[in-house]
Every structure is written in structure tokens, then in C-alpha cells.
Image (cartoon, rainbow, N blue to C red; front, side, top):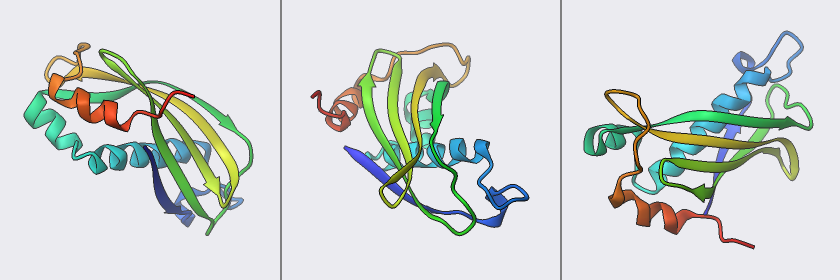
Length: 137
């Protein structure tokens, strides 16, 4: 399942030259991952309240190909590419039309909401996440 989030570039997202500030792409991707989970009925609040876990970014690899600028209409994708015992791996892109501006691999760890120590993904979530996994080529 590939999730797509439309995003408009606002003045607050840009530097003095009207180019999207590099850290803003991470925020766009966070929104897409959050809404991806929400589309699976796995809200961040439910993770904490029902399962006692949180998803936290462990690592990000971003490849910048071209800049986005003020007023651009973007598509931010989130696709679950790996599912492990305590980790999810997302493949993400920020595109303007068909042009890939930023490509990323994001590793998300599951932690206990109280201790922030690694925790297994709750068993009740596994079938939902497996159903959303990108099919292997």
C-alpha cells in the first residue's frame, strides 16, 4: 500500500530565497507516515493508549534531487517496505508532479511509551501492518 499526502509549500516552509528549507522535508514525511498509519486505523494516540508503545524515528537517509519552491503542489508518499520485530522501514518520496525532489528511507523503532526502551510491535498490529507491506518484487 502506497499512501499519498498532498502538501502545498507555504512561505513558512521556505528560506529567504523561496526554496523549501531542507529540514521541512522531514516534517512533510512525518505527516505522511502519521496519516499512513491513521489510514490503517493506527493513530499515534491509540499506539500509546491501547498498546503502550510509540513509533520513533531511528534513522533517515535522504537524497535531495531538486528543490521545491513557494506555492508548489507536492505529493509526499509513504510506503511500508520492511516489517521487523521492533522496527518498520518506510520508503518515501516528495514529488512535484512526476519529478522526484527527495527520496528517503526511514527506519522507525517501536519503544515502550513509559521507558523509551525498544519494544516489540504489538501482536494485534502485525496482521494490519503485514497487509500494508509493499509486495516483494
